[in-house]
Length: 86
Image 1 (cartoon, rainbow, N blue to C red):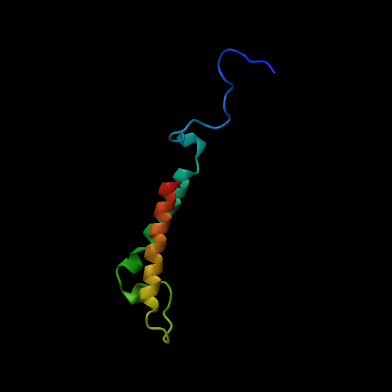
Image 2: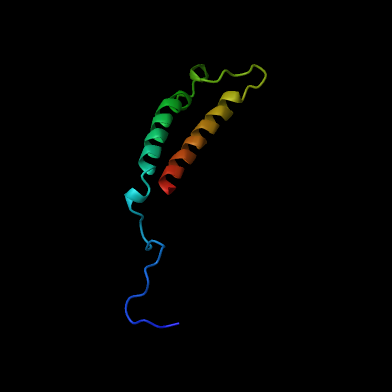
């Protein structure tokens, strides 16, 4: 084994810091799709009107709309934070 004077070999790992946008070109389309989905699916449940729900409520389970609204709102928060973390 010989020791060479000069620069160390290039590391295959990128330097720490923010990744360049062209290394993750799928992030922008993901955000657009997530925003479009949220713009379509969130408003009926934010109005708190069970009549605007896209899922019919069964008659035997009164808290259906409340639980469905919570599911949609918290799922929306999860989608936004997913996009921001990526």
